[in-house]
Image (cartoon, rainbow, N blue to C red; front, side):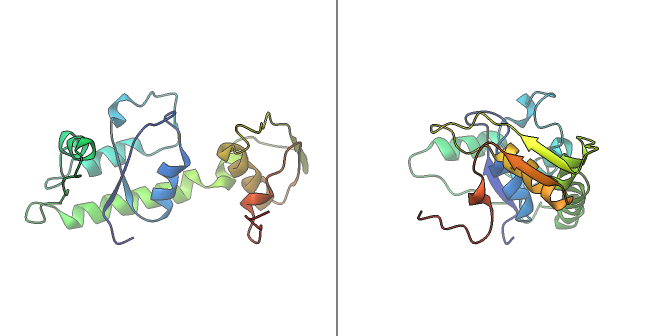
Length: 167
């Protein structure tokens, strides 16, 4: 990623695929209001490391970021590179990316289930109003990556390469 940070925040709920996409792109999430993130939510998210990155010298304060987002013209946010400890940032960034690799990939979430059978059936309350459930889809990917047979009562074909999005 060519950016140091990508701003994210709670919207409909705390847990959101956007936060993980930022991490997987190699960028660091600038997570507004992360101090209010309940300990029971996003339990595998490296919140302490993300907070440490956000508090590095030269990084705009959370109030500055929030004010910029609230303004009509979107005041430009800049890192003060005179104060910004690039080496510390890179060290913390590498720690976050290693954490993601060690604990957050879909196979890790599937392994958490300690499944003892080669076949898994997932029953989901997918609806027309909410056909997408990214946690379910990530679990399916993890189970498939572990070589398990996965059966579902809903269609998740859209998550696989080659799916025709126009159909």
